Length: 194
Image (cartoon, rainbow, N blue to C red):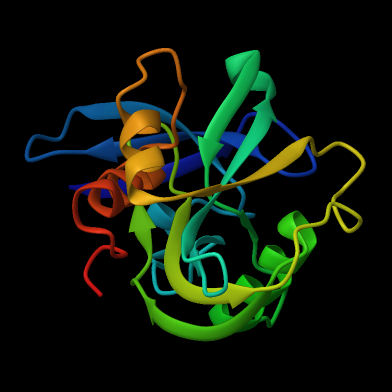
């Protein structure tokens, strides 16, 4: 496959659409529309090494529970269950972003970073956005004082049994990556892979 052209279709602050022209094995041009947070899509720049965002799977030391958030999402016209997450700021490390986002969205402090994934892609049919899943231990009392004015986030602490109940409720809308970690926690009582 070879990318032969990129055309910007929108001009928004946080996310834009691009039309990508490419060839497969034959010379016939093909087209794909994708969304990206970057000035140029990754498929044109070849830059895949740094993530756009972090997702924080946090285990609360004192409560001995997993930290889950319930957040209003416009695209779902309702709440989504997932983990604290956010975009990396220019020059910010994955670890620093995880600490900052956990504090901003939940009021909790990272005590120890356990592991971080490489950049992960979850909707490559629509976007080139990548995230690093960061596993942490945290502590403190939840608070919402640092949330953005547009954020509606509730902090929920779940035991393995409570996680099992959440995962078994078909009415709940889950972030796909969070569901995998939460269901593993429900089955084992541990964060995935740790």
